[in-house]
Amino acid sequence: MDVGRAVEGWGVLERAVDLARRGEPFVLATVVWREGPSSGQHGSRAIYTADGEMHGWIGGACAEPVFKREAVKTLEAGKPRLLALGASDRFGDLPDGTMAVEMSCQSEGALQIYLEPVMSMPHLVIVGDSPMSQTLAQQAGHLDWNVELVNGSDFSEGVASSNSIVVIATQGHGDEEVLTSALKSAPAYVGVVASVKRGASLREFLAGQSIDSAQLDALHIPAGLDLGSTTHKEMAVAILAELVQRRAAGEFTGVVIDAPQPETAIDPICGMTVDAVPTSNPLEVGDETYYFCCPGCRAAFESQQGA
Image (cartoon, rainbow, N blue to C red):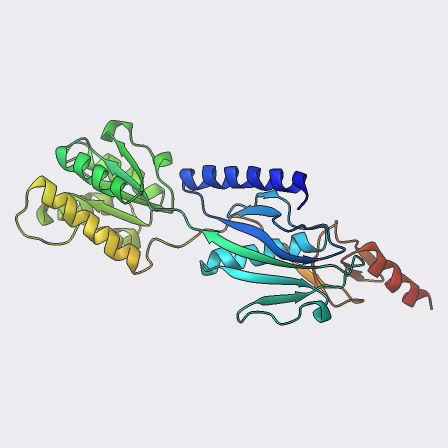
């Protein structure tokens, strides 16, 4: 293995640990097989994040755009995949479920890349400083969830995101203001520790603030499973149990893909799918713009047009 590539791979793993700690979903790609000539090496690694950032190296100009497209699909599916790139006669016997993408690059190399989605642990924002809030934070921390415990006066719209779980336990101290701020972020879950009667009052207030009816219907008041009369520790258990139940049902595993996805085109020479972007060797012929995987395919097409 090339030593430089190995060191670079360790750097990618360090970035992966940092992203995981921040709760950002990403795909970790590792080259598990290659046939030269190919710029990708055994053990080469790269990361592709949900917002479209790539770190590391797994292959050259032909492999990279294919990797990015397949990384997005892997994030959306939330399941690992094996990606085979190269001429079809180089693939050999592939394991079941392998995604094979034929490429006709001039290098004539081939790669197999293992794509592993790393989904973030739930981001739980607990608003309030009551004993129940502290107990809930401790319990969720034991599950390795990404927990933030903030006072009501310190909570703002920017604390939560669309992937966050927000539990409001301010217990009458600024509930309305915190709820209004929380809903602006459209979190995956918003629950309030309150009685049914208090919940009705909060819904009435929010309706008067022109809050969308769908958001009102999605509120969980009171938060947690109904265990009857409980202590504050048992209440924390009831809330966490509901959240675990919903996560197991797939409610908190959705990934928002912020990476812009370019239009694609078919290379008329090799048939490869390429991004319809300026770096894909565009060629205008009349009113049509063609895109190519490499300058060689473009030159061959130009030669055909001149024949």
